[in-house]
Image (tube, rainbow, N blue to C red; front, side, top):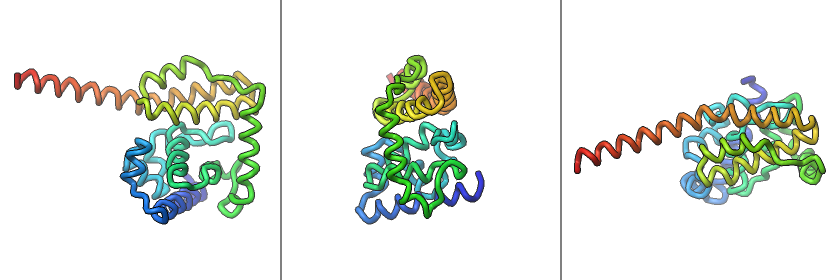
Length: 203
């Protein structure tokens, strides 16, 4: 990751942390309310977003990508009362986004663009198969904000690039997130099997 982008992430992390501390909110509280692991919350505050699932893929078609990166940062910002729009602006790539000093002046424009995308007649539901895969591997809490945010991004890509590219974008986001989700699923299955085996031996 280049230095310019990382400086935006570090700045965003410090802004979120300052807002959290000013409101006397602990990381444990955010974890309990949003179900975001504490080590991911710390990574956000440190600006080290590569530690988040999907952190290596945050730029697609010129809009903020990375299902987990965007959703986790947005959920964190919303809970502590920081502008979600400003947070997303700081996640934007430098060639399409804004410098730190320009964030405040462009917040309204981004919000207007998103409202326009939501109201567009082209705003449609993403491919059902991808949604099915996410529903299968995500917990209930994760579905609420991850799928919702991904659907919102899908609408923006759809309005800019059309149905075909939007579907390809959506599928790419889904399949890029499957590896960590499958690993977690396998780990949970192994844990359950180990627990059952221990119980069997005890009984």
